[in-house]
Amino acid sequence: MLFKGKWLLSQAWYGLGKGMTNAFSNLGAECVIASRKLDVLNQTAEEISSKTGNKVHAVQCDVKDPESVANAVSRLIEVAGHPDVIINNAAGNFISPTERLSANGWKAITDIVLNGTAFVTLQIGKELIKAQKGAAFLAITTIYAESGSGFVVPSASAKAGVDALCKSLAAEWGRYGMRFNVIQPGPIKTKGAFSRLDPTGIFEKEMIQRIPCGRLGTVEEIANLATYLCSDYANWVNGAVIRMDGGEYVSMAGEFNELRKVTNDQWNIMEQMIRKTKGS
Image (tube, rainbow, N blue to C red):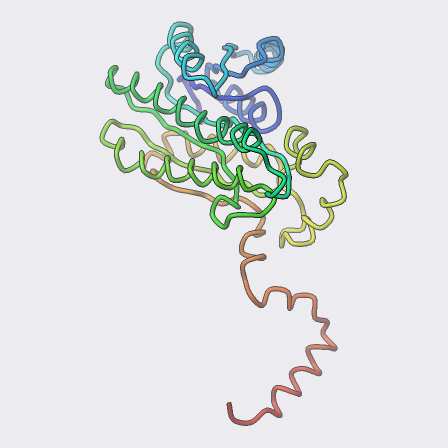
């Protein structure tokens, strides 16, 4: 699979963003990465480009600010042309009892996750429509965008909004040759996420215990799925929301799934008790 086009990745200087950039660049893409911290972006761009031999451009962008997004998109088109792939990976999150949450705390997360994704998507989408050019859009959300989750309520709300945005535009903008898909990762240990969601490290063991595959996910696994969804191999995939979590969501959702803790001896006893039960 070879990418000959250009793509934009928001908030791309570590973790999933860096991993996806590396994967696309390895496959031949000319990449443009965007974030607020230009010095770190430049270092990341040079690091990836030196390994893959393909161009990686760094563009400063604060996704919370529509003017900054407009300037970044103009710069993107200037240095690399209209993009073939756009990945919205900008995220912000922290754990907090909701009763301790301030209005500023709520706004900090929703401005990055929901508004930032919308600003980038709309700005680039309008430019693509004017240029009569299609593209593949991909957003990275989370499994609790579907279920909701306490203690990360701003993130759950904003990520659910991103899912709805992508499904809505898949229906409306498909006629322009644009595709919109979503990856919902389960727990993946990256510095940016775990420093705010598991600062003491005590929850990691519990996370692994509830994942049927018995481990956390890796950046490389998400990057591999991202490259497929944005490639020509996935040209008929539009409006999809793909959960990639080692089975965590279905494990927590099933009412009787906790029975996996029952031993064989206990099952033998219960089976005999059930066999003796008559009638309803």
